[in-house]
Length: 387
Image (tube, rainbow, N blue to C red; front, side):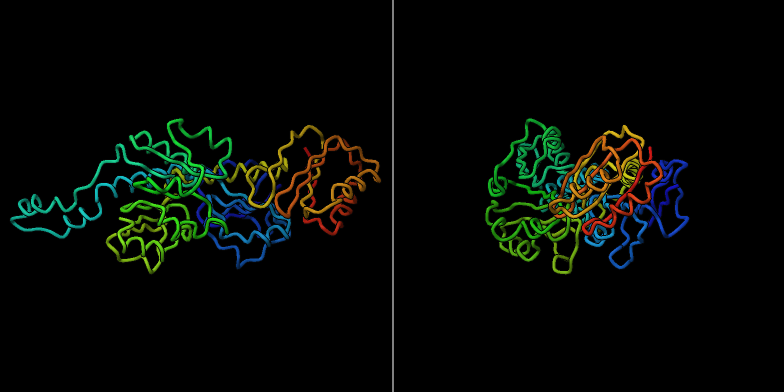
């Protein structure tokens, strides 16, 4: 029986995915956490914790280094809220082009007997432009960016995509009508609108700064519905004040960009739909079950992808440091116990490696073998999975 602990409100559709082999919120010493926004940086992780799944795309609320040291795999649910963010982004694109927020604010603060006459006179202040034929630069074409790019293309926009880490799977999702730029400046230089859809990390923090604004043409409108900090707010304001940028629309507020007519801030609602929450919960539950029951890994934050068909009665998984002779030490312990390895697979991601070993028999020495493997200095966690 596996123990699951949840934080925040996890959609019932996700919780209902767990089979009878799982108990939910019966103990703090859980095998798995299914979370949303709870901050785990201030919490101790139990030794029993094998996997954390964050129902959403980001993982800033998870202490990755501590989880790794604890032998805990960390996953997100990529793509579960992609359509929600795409729809909000397209809505903002249309609102920006037609000055809808300013127009609605004007209408809300004007009344009186001559309202029709004044409105007819003043409406020219809010004249916008059509999206048809305009150029949109999409920076990052993963789950969200590819949807935005395709939707904008269907609206008749010329779309230029830039993503130096474009995967083959993502490439298949992008319409052939979309042009791919080889460099960031090349993507930006002719854009009427720029939207950012990249994950936040050391490389992307502040990636839209002074040099990037200088590469854009005057009057550009910028959208950031990815993560706060990817656009340098100080340089964004300079671009707005100089006229280089016409407007900034973002899901991530901070004091310096508030209360400006040329900035629209929404309260981090990009993925806040019932459908997205359900998708994340369902995907999160399935990720937990797949990892606990097979040890296979796909799209983990701190482990490499490793998926091996489970065709033997027993599977041993080892999460360890990515250093020389680890596989040799593991194989030696099994050989000394006269255990024949049917299949062994290994992969690494940065400083962490993961090994899957399939065997047909362990007899009654399974606990001894697990203890011996766990005693290897660079090993984080050893698991025995019985089919």
